[in-house]
Length: 423
Image (cartoon, rainbow, N blue to C red; front, top):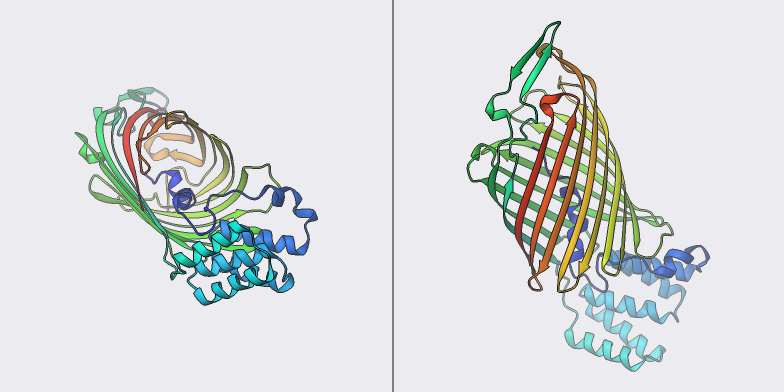
């Protein structure tokens, strides 16, 4: 058992739930900035850079950029306003008041702008406090193949004379109902967009308790500005238990780059490089280091959202793992659409491919070089019960095709869950 793939994307996904100062963390780039960056003036470039920093939660970077802008362009009213609001959000009341006074005396602010300044003054420039968000999930489900039992009923060994060995019942598919509870927590660590995150999930089967699992993962992410690109570096540690015993430990380093490329409105491209080390405590010779490079393209317009990704992977075996090193790729496609009456539907498809370098286990008479193909089809229907509660029904089908028959398996999972988003 390993962590779900999306656990490493949790910080970026849950960041959109946080209400950051001036702009949400999931806001897209300004259309003019995306299409006309090549012809913008130096002042426009600084202003765009500052707004991008605000949209990404990098308030300290935004403040420094806005200071440079107002020094170069003392008549840039928008820069003065953004700088004043940013300083107020950081708790610098005296500096914010000085900037508000400049706006009132140097420019001719509209009635709406004066009302905004008055409202900000009335609310006060409180000391910066970190935003946080917690998502709690509780659900019930049915798993058709809890143990990933083989699709075949016997193992055929051909060592000159074919021999058929029937598989024991515990290696055949076993179904069960289960309960699951999960907690995803995200918290800002600095005013410049660094965040810490924690994810915990517990699954308890009704009968097959030896397959009960628990997983915890924690880490932090820090954004950087490199030229026109935003780079987010993160590191994390995790652990998985199976049947009440510690099964796996892992650590990951990751860098995610959002290059400043001109893209259509609502589109965003991320390039990701990661290294994950896995340590299996109950399996001999299975430790590994996995290197992955991924490109992810997301798009949103109105009620429709889409996400596509493709990655190349290299799994470097430690010790004498059966099959040696593995190389593969991973592709995914997700579509989501909001429906009337607070409903939403989501469809997803993933395909993962692994090819080993050596025969799996000649000493066990399995001298085939393993080739694994795993396809997953997922669909969900969700209903917004309230501002913070969502009811979700999810169905998932898994087809694991391999050239070694005893590793082939199919699975179907149906789960109903309730989610609470806590402030």
